[in-house]
Image (cartoon, rainbow, N blue to C red):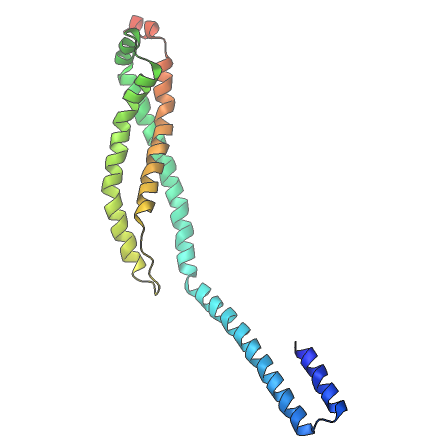
Length: 186
């Protein structure tokens, strides 16, 4: 755009425009270029300083992500051990239910419901605490973001699905076992 404008100024000079008019046109054109360059340079510098301000939050996010994944993994291992222990304690009951005609789905549901109640209770206790802590943390920022309710619902559904996936492996294994072998050894 600027080169086109300079060509127009050069053409005007050839056609007899005054030198004062040409200087005025050049100063107008270059002041526009300086304004454009300033408008481009300021946001880049502004966003860089903004990024530097939130570098600590990015580091905190990485640390929280790593330790959250580690906590979820440890919780799943603990839940798997608890499910294995509960099915071991209830093997005789499971075998008697199978002999009396209970399906694999009913036995799996029976074993899973107890754990899902605990996960739901833990979620109900954890959600207000998490909302309070997150709300307190978000108050320190210049631009506040409200915490949506669906985030907690999504977290609860994910917790139930992870627990169900963890428990179902042991519950299905117990439901598919041969009740004759178990009752013979008891």
